[in-house]
Length: 146
View 1: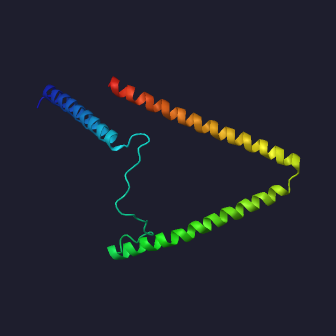
View 2 (view 1 turned 60 degrees about the vertical axis):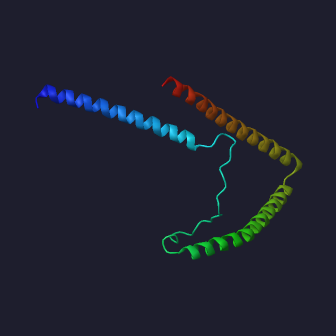
View 3 (view 1 turned 30 degrees about the horizontal axis):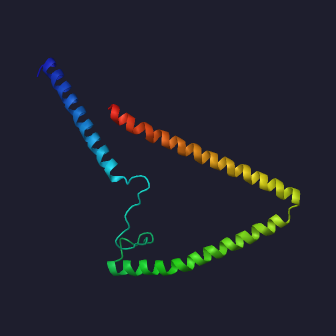
C-alpha cells in the first residue's frame, strides 16, 4: 500500500470510528434517560424484602441460610431502633443539662448563634438546589442543540 492509499484508509477508519462512537453515545444517553424515574416519582418496591449480608457471607451461605440471616436482621432491627431512640432521649437530656449551666445572656447568645447557623445552612442548601436546577435546565437545551 502506498502512502496516499494508507492516508485515505486511515481517514475513512477515523470517520467510521467517530460515527460509531456518536451513535453508541446517543443510544446510551437515551437508555439512561428512560431508566431514571421522573421527579417526584418513587422507585417501585421490591417483591421480597432483603437485608444486607455481613461481609464475606454471600460467598458461603445458601438460600436457606440467607433467608434466616435476613429474618434475624429484621428481628434485631426493632431492638436497635429502640436503643437509638433511647440514646436520642439521653442526648437531649444531656443537652438540656449542659444548657442549664449557662446564664440567661449566654442562652440568648447561643440561640442567636444557632439561628445564624441554621440560616447559613438553609442558604447553602437553597444555593445548591438552585445550581442543580440551573444545570438541569441547561441540559435539555444542550440536547436540543445537538
